[in-house]
Image (cartoon, rainbow, N blue to C red; front, side, top):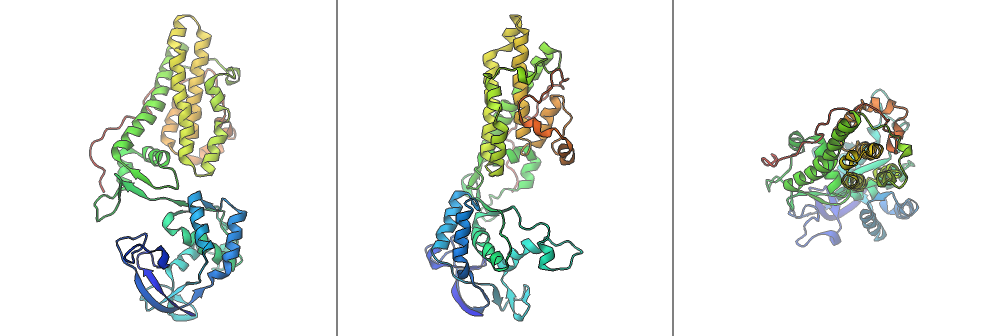
Length: 411
């Protein structure tokens, strides 16, 4: 047990170093609230003992903390010197009592971090540490808000080291969201209700906008007009319209079937084939890095190239000239690039991707993970040439209807 005195933020439930406070002794996270001076006798965790071990962890595993800006933040904090921190509180009417001293309750953040391990216990298992870590520990990823990074990237690994347990695979800190350039809050009356947003525009639209337009890990802003314009331009126009007009040409020129063309026989200098050859690996890498905006941009580049390709090749003119074989190659190339794009975006827009696949003649629902995982050849769908020649195509229908700005999404 030791004495702790210092500036304490009630909202954070954390003691703050004076060097990190804003003018007027205000919390850097809850800037409208002043911190309180507290002087307590508490039980402590000896964090200072693990400074060298933590620095070694960060050096040996550079990707342990992401994004890079947050890693640098943690390195700066740890290099400045670690202080032991309190793990108990006194004179609280709620909380879990310290087992050997009921006059103290366990500090909420200390207990909350332990929950990552205790939550892994099966309901019928004996509540032992050995049972808790026997199956699922260590976890691959802690995905957290940037305001609680220190707890997860400094305190928690040190606690695990003290218990002789392996640390998690990665800690990724996401940013904060503003609305129309202003911080959201009930007092401002500008909060954003995610359920209402999904009900109004659909889950695919919401996922796509936030993962494409806001670099994961950074702060971002929601503006409803920009939201609608982005979705209309990229999902309705670039992707949806490309599929729609190509299907209509396939119906007109190829009897409603995929052209009698093999993906292997498409020339290597075909721009769509060239862009698609390593796209699956690139996008998979972006997903692994949680770089969702880069994944979307890479796929969208293929979609835009498809629109340019069909405009330049002008299959309607080629057909009039009697170049039917070339028409088939052009239409196959566009349909195959749309298929690859929809497959690679299926983790983000599964409903739209399912609709595209069904119009291309497949019976795949990307929301049904059991069915998807049961397809033994499904890995081939990320590479060029998986669209079978002569496969019957479905009816061309809009896969994403254009959005209109009607009323403000309820808060």
